[in-house]
Image (tube, rainbow, N blue to C red):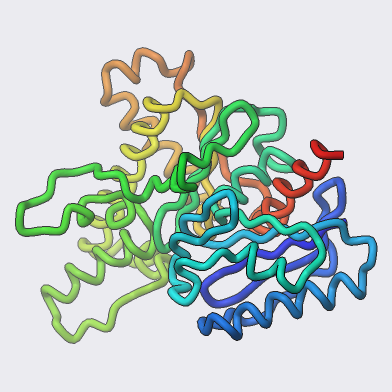
Length: 311
C-alpha cells in the first residue's frame, strides 16, 4: 500500500493506492499558500495515515511546476510559496517512509500506462488541458523529464506570429489553446474591447453554450480548436508517438472530444506530408481514462517502481 498525494492550487487530493493501482480512502484538504503551513499540513497528513495504515510502504506526491528528480521545486505553478524548496527533503526530515515528488502532468501520463488508456504502450504523449496546457512525455515506458525536469512544457510552444510590441508568449499554446488561459482569456479580452465593464468568464462551458448565437464565441472557439490541433500535429511530428492522450476536465466531455478529433483530422489533411501518412504513422488521439484519480495514482507509480527495482 502507498500514500498518493495530488497537490493542486486550491485543494490537495489524497488516498491509498494498492499494488494494482486501485485507490481507496480518498479525501481532500485545502491547499495552504503559506509555506510553513503547507509543509505542516502535508507532514501531518502523512504521519497520520502511516499510523492509521502501518502497511504503507512509501509516499508519492505530484504537484504543478518544474520539479527536478531530487525533489527540488524550481517552480510550482500558482503555489508561489513553494518556489525554490526541495519538497522531498523538507518532508523526509519528519517522515521515515520513502518519498518521491513528481510533476502533476507527468503523473497523469504515467498513471495511464499503469492502469489507464496507455496500458501496454511504450511511447506516447499526454496533454492536460486546463488553465494552461501541461504535458507528459513517455519514451520506452519511462517519463522523459529532461535535464531539469522541464520536459513536457507543451504550453510554452509558440504556434503563431506575434508583433514586436507583444510578449512572445502571447502566441504560445498556453495563451491560445488552453481552456482558461487561452479560450476564456481571448473571449474576455475581445469582449472587454467592446464593453469595458464586461466581468469576464472563467468557465469555458458558458462560451460553448453561447456559440450558437454569439459570433465572438464562434470566432474564439474556432480559433481555439485550430490552435490546439496545430499543437497536437506539431507534437506528433516531433515525437512520432504511438498515441496522444488528452486529459483535463473538459476532455471528459464526449462532445468536446469528438469535435477535437474531427478538427485534428481536418488540419492533418491540410498538411501535405502529414496527410500522406494518415493511417500509417500518424498517432491517434484518445481521452485519458483515470480522471480525478490520475494524479493520486500517477504520484505513486514512480516510487513503487523505484522500490521494486531496488528490492
